Length: 436
Ligand code: NMX
Ligand code: MLT
Image (cartoon, rainbow, N blue to C red; front, top):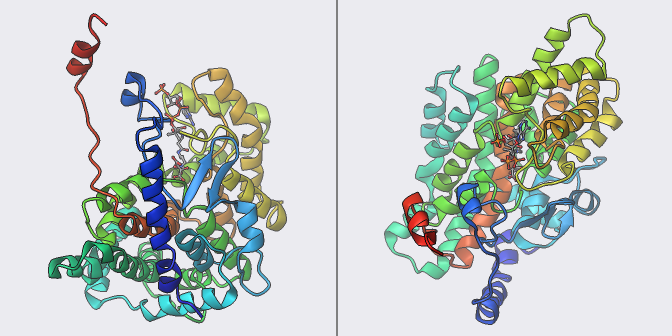
C-alpha cells in the first residue's frame, strides 16, 4: 500500500505546475480590491490568500477538498460499527485531496503509532507546569517542548535544498499529530484529575478513541463524539486566526512546531476557539440564574439581552464569514438528537437556537445572528462527563492541528514565500486621498 508521503509526493509536481500555470495566466488579474474600511476592518472579504485544503462558502459552510461535512461522514473510512470519519482519514483527505481506503488509514495509524512516544524532556516540561495554568497555555508550552525533535529545523541547519522542505515539514507534521493527543490528555489528567493516565494505545486504537481513553473515557459513544469533534474542527479555510497564524509563522520557515504554537495562541482567544469554553460557562450561569423557574423562550430572551446590555458578545453566535447556521453546529445537533435528545443542557441550547438569532437581529449590529460551531460542542462533551469547560479549547486545538499542518506541508511544497503585506498609516491614507 502506498504510504501517505508517497501519495502526497506523487501530487506535488502537478500541483506546482498548476500554480505556475495559474500565475502565468491570471497573475495580473484582480482577485479583489481592498477598501480603507477593509484595511481597518480585519481585512474582511479581501481575497488575498490561497489555501488548498478547504474552502468556505458563506451560505453553505466548509468543504474539505470539495466535500461537505455530510459527504465526508458518508465517504470516509469509519471505525467498525461507527458513523463518524476516522481522524486519520480526515488528515489523509486534507493532505492528499483523495478519499483514503481502509488500508491507507491503517498504515497511517501505524505511522502515527511509530512516532507517538513523547520525549522525556517534553514530559518533564509538561509535568512542571502549574495545574491551574490555563490548559491552552499548557498545550502551547507542551507543543514548544516537542519542538527540539523538529526534522525541519535540523534539515535547515544542515542546509538542505529548498525543494525538499515539504518532506521535513511532513515529517514534523506526522510527529506532532502523533504526539499531540497524549500531550493534551496529560494536561487534562494533571489539571482535573490526579495525573494518572491510561497508557497510549496508538496503533491499536484510532486517534479519537485513543485520545478518549487517555483522558479516562471508555464509552463507544464518546469515541464517536471524539471522531466527530476531531473531524469538524479540523479546518476552516485559510483566513481564520489559527490557520492564518500557522501560515504566517511558517512563512518565515519556522518549523511546524513553532508555527502551530502561533496558531494555538490565536485559538486561545475568546472570539475564536475559546468561545466553546465561554458558551458552557454562560449556559451554566443561565441555569443558576433561572434557578427553579421554568426555562421559557421569554426568560432566555431576557438573559440574552442582559449579555448585550452588559456590552459583551453572546458566545457561540455570529461569524466573520459565514452568513447562515454553521453546518458544524448542525452536525452536532444531529448527533445530540440521535444520542441525547433529553439532555437538559441540550434543551437549553436548542431553545437558544430559537431565541438568540431574533435578539441579535433586533439589536441590529451583527452580520450573522446564527450559531457557530462553539455554540454546541460543550453540551455534548458535558453529557458524557467531560464537564471541565476550561479544557474544551484544547480539544479544538488537537483537531485544528489536522488541517493547519496539512496546509503547512502544501505551503512548503508550493514554495510559498515569506508573508509581508504592506501597511500604511492613517496619515498616509489622509495624504493619499486628500484632494482626490
Ligand atoms: N454577540 C454580540 N455582538 C456581536 C456578536 C455576538 N455573538 N457577533 C458580532 N457582534 C457584534 C460585533 O462585536 C460588532 O460590534 P461593534 O460594531 O460594536 O464592534 C458587530 O456585531 C458587527 O460584527 P460582525 O461583523 O457581525 O462580526 P465580526 O466579523 O466582527 O466578528 C465574531 C465575528 C465571531 C468574532 C463575532 O460574531 C463574535 O464575537 N461572536 C461571539 C464569539 C464567538 O462565538 N466566537 C467563535 C467564532 C467561531 N470560532 O470558533 O472561531
Ligand atoms: C474557525 O473554525 O476557524 C472559526 O469558525 C473562525 C473562522 O472561520 O473565522
